[in-house]
Image (cartoon, rainbow over all chains, first blue to last red; front, side, top):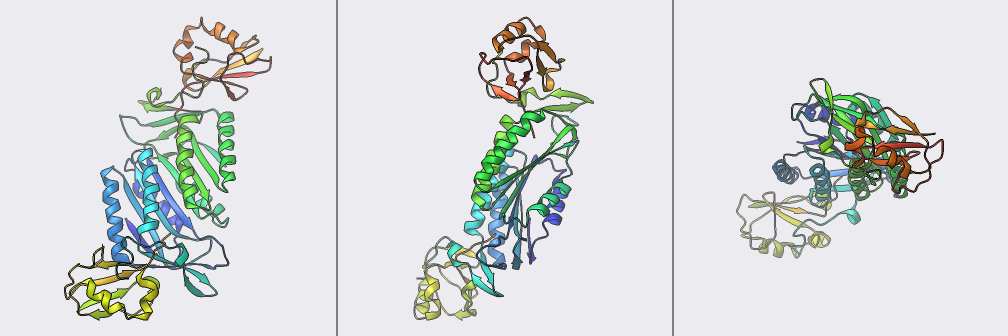
Length: 145
Length: 145
Length: 73
Length: 73
């Protein structure tokens, strides 16, 4: 399941609701990865644009892969502005087996960073500044160059 | 920080409290691993004995290791009986960096399974049955044989 | 006419183009100074699937998207 | 007298022993049928640190612990 929110994530609500929804489903391991915006280099926060159609198909592909291992994925992400010390991103794996779960959360989060069509901006003096240096080109980049 | 509880863990309370305690501390990644008791092979739940002095020194050793990478560990575990579909175990890593966090949660949970002085019993018909087949000998086992 | 959208930080209005394939779009864009810094680093999607060949046929209702480097989380 | 405790599922009452080293404890236990199934698989701690040699000196106030195979989580 993929949830998108305007502004920061309500971490306590999301994690508690997800836990309540899944605890009776006989997964032995529930592993959330919670991203919190760091106060660094003078930013006031981050801001995000998301291209939802491709994000959804990317997520659905990972969900199918997880299901083949009897695991399940959950994800929440912010759109728009997210102040320092609040959360913009949660990914979670549910798995019957610990080792499968630990491998999936690692691989899912790493591929998220490389592939999810989300653009990040630093919030500096009320302006959005594209975080170009921290961004990664998608596969096939430069095709029209 | 290491927290031990009689009976099942209150996951929502623990995660929300930990998140509240750490969100302003500029860690970018908060990664809890939550273990949930699976209903399998006819058990009603699990039960645990813990030898606290060695658990604490094992945990303190890992905390020192995490601190060297500017990361931090949190852990909660149950003593006594924990019914199916409730939680007996939470470990969490806080790290400025995603990759360090993902590596530490994996290594910490795996070493926990191999090294933490905790004994697990299946609860079957009101009796505690030592989970011998799923247990791992500690380093140096057999010294007195 | 196929539509072209410029995602994320590119900050350019969508446009419509009359083309048969992506080679023709490349030719159109080669004169566009506003895209100079982006073409090297953008991936291309046709109808929300990433593509890796300029020979892809483009139909009149197709949607073409330019996706700059990403950084979620 | 050093104390010996049997942790987790062993289910044996603690005892006191008058020994100089773990070799002597091994000799004492060799006659104890209740420990037969455990000695092969138990690790040994002296004062809450795991040890790997029978030559460890034991002092009168030391605490010796037998730790069977573990399974937390």
